[in-house]
Length: 61
Image (cartoon, rainbow, N blue to C red; front, side, top):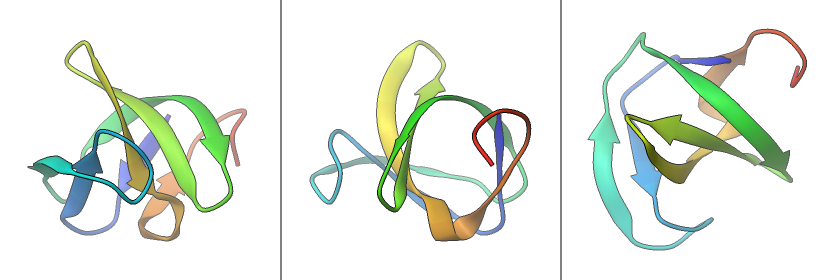
């Protein structure tokens, strides 16, 4: 799980097209981590958010 610390771009791939903006202070399920990004589930859609702007909870910290 990760909680956003700011409004974040939710991207189809790391550093690619923005699918939507995720609001401040929401928690998403982290499916994995690569470099500076988390792969998260957003209502059944998988995408990427930047790791520097979230607070990790659980196994991906």
